[in-house]
Image 1 (cartoon, rainbow over the protein chains, first blue to last red):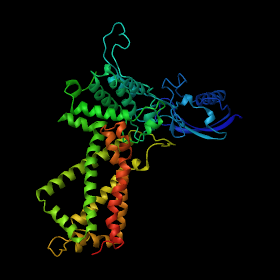
Image 2 (cartoon, each protein chain N blue to C red):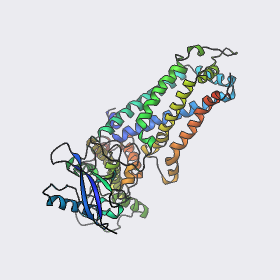
Image 3 (tube, rainbow over the protein chains, first blue to last red):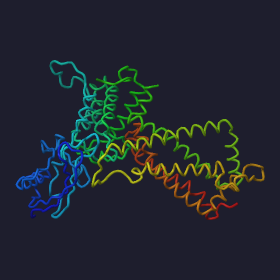
Image 4 (cartoon, each protein chain N blue to C red):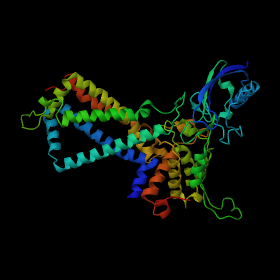
Length: 261
Length: 226
């Protein structure tokens, strides 16, 4: 198969400015074996040769596990394929002559730093509020000293597969971060080590999520469809349930007042 | 009570408030539908039902007060959530493609506002008697309010019939999302009844639209006559 020529519409926004605009570029000679990010690398080489500013975009591992790459491609976070990050999207999914719209993950809580790079620090704040267990330091405990049923461990692992990329927020009609927060809540809620702080954790993390300015969940489930790791909306139900318990059932003074931390 | 205020202001608390009040309104919608299917059992039965409701006295006012309260809470919370959600994405996408959500889930605020306007009109029509005052004070042969004739004469009016068909359709679109969504919001989910959480909304909406449209269409097609 021959190489592709493409028309790209890319969001350009200079660092430190509030306004940006879509700009159109032509790229030629893209191999169908290139990844989407490699295609952007080719574009940036062409721009640099012409003395123009390259397009800023985030990437790190380029093997789908770090959560750094983002991009909304033709209206879908991480592009058209299910269970795939942008770095794992390949140009063979496109045809010669295609027009591709590339925009940053959009949310008030994810301010654009420059071009396609957004600041996802709000996620760090949510995790810092309660996404941990308190444990004594010292030598590592023996493996399997605490028995955990297989199904339970599997469910914890399914939630822990969240790489914190923010596609859930980008896909949500309301820019809600419920799927991310629920994954972090549920991962620890399924394990014995997570139980002592379970209710104050959910309270603190939801409070941090709300404070960051994300929208509210109205059960569209676009997040689940966009998630490159297939995190289930059922974890949001678990978070809703645990949050209600932290308000109406918990007797723990910390959980009742301000949560963990 | 400050804990309760911060609960309903939280994102999870607000949607649980929407779920609980919405559930109350859905239950009312079901009872209201069943009551008016009584139009098919004739004037005597239907007027007896209306007479029974009017005769509840204090209970009637408690029910009306409760219903109004949950309706107002549902409406105010819904509007404030819709505004907050719109504000959470100040810069919109040039291209955004949805893959999972439905058009009725995405138009909840719009259908909700239209249903609100319709309910005000509906109360002015059948509860306050302002729209067709001539039909409002008929008595039947047993001296009861003749709700049956008010119903039939009301829906003989084509404009009223059409506005009702449109409003009920929009209400059922609203419920197609809402009448199942509350389960997720309250965290009531389990693989055993996942089929229920997935289909409760559309199924209930279909039942309600059939039940609500049957009596007025019965009038329009002369199955229900004076």
